Length: 211
Image (cartoon, rainbow, N blue to C red; front, side, top):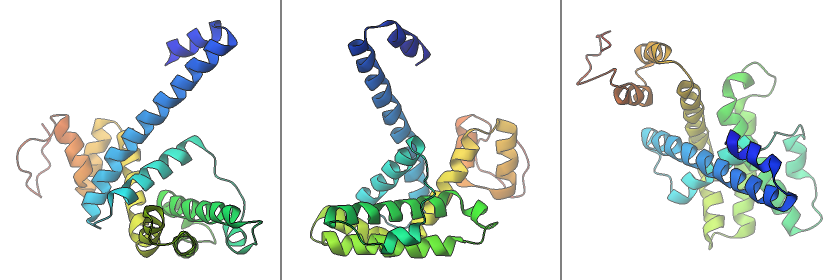
């Protein structure tokens, strides 16, 4: 990726723009693949029976927020303020729902130290996705997925909490990862330790042996 950047800087504007677009697509693809694996594992662990469409919605949501910044706009105001037309209303509802889900799932620990807790964002998100589902209609796939997100919003928050833990663990060295596993017996952490060859065979719940 560094070599591509250096090459792009030496090219004419048109060619440089093309290489930058290729880099952006490559990055987006790798980010989505990374989140798809983790979201799938978190979904399976939570056993919530989510649709494939909802799973991919979470993957895309995580990828979008990886490449964008959260705004400081008050979501409660945005949820109730009038819109110029139906398209703008859909955009606002989606923004409120997506942001609420992301914040409640990814920053739950931080919210415990603020005046606004997770339940506040759960309420906002459920309301926004519910309104989206009704406005878009349940006859189409997109309306159905918003209905599913509204109905199971707290469960999807739990999924994003699990994703956040896994993202944090993925950047942790093996020793720390093993210490985390000893405390939590987290299935995803155990899987990574097994892949690294550090845990083999069946594990005795009381055992502290690492290979």
